[in-house]
Length: 387
Image (cartoon, rainbow, N blue to C red; front, side, top):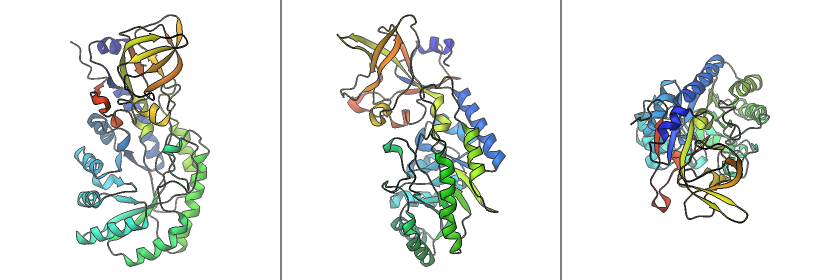
């Protein structure tokens, strides 16, 4: 819930902007870290979810490592204070330059997604006189029942190494002297709300790791990735995800051998609910069948609705009274620049302030200057200006 004092201060700021609730982020991190410490797990924050400097600082200070998907994310994580020994690096298309950046940083592990990638990392590491630690990102062919654009663990997805390639991987590893296999990595998708998927993943992890163990290949680390979803429909009622239920399921279903370490890569579940996009109403356009609320924020500020057909709870912060049905749209010259279809809002007028909730993940980090729009600034709950 955004306080009335915060709303008062919003009125002095140029819109659109991102507003981050620092207290909620800290509460979320406390609940998460309490649970991973209880079970002895390790966590690496997915930098791609939100790379704002203050956000990264708070997460790093909470003790999490970093999960990166580009060389620049690796550099940013190091510059933000994350210990390289807690940095993992995934991605199907790591360039030579990016691999060298990660090798120079001395990261914990590359999550490798193809046989050619393993060969390239070995060759580059050999040329630098070092040995790269790698985990195999395994594609377990599990449908996470989420949007097709963020499902990553099915056999037709581009991510990961399929089990039918294991024999070739094992033979290759025997020949390579500049990579060390330290674990297996799994990530089946994002915004997963069907909890039954996670016990299935645990059973699949056991089946797949047994193949390597039977071959005499030690698996020191199991990385189950991220993917736990948040409540976009009722963010004010459920500001913190189901961490307790999630980790109880993992602990109950995952077979962990002596000396094995278990890792996770949370992103959206950590930062999703702490961020809101605050916008101002430019116009209310009334047609014969539709009422349109036209905001100064658009798909250039928050692309999720246009890209994923995602929904965000929308609240008029400065009006009350009788409710009307509106389509809420942005100013960008694209028909897909629409945040909501047929939502109830109190009678809305030019100048009203509107909040789009649950925008802390894949919001500001995906912003662009399409139509040459300005990039929205970030403000924090404990640093709001008061002129």
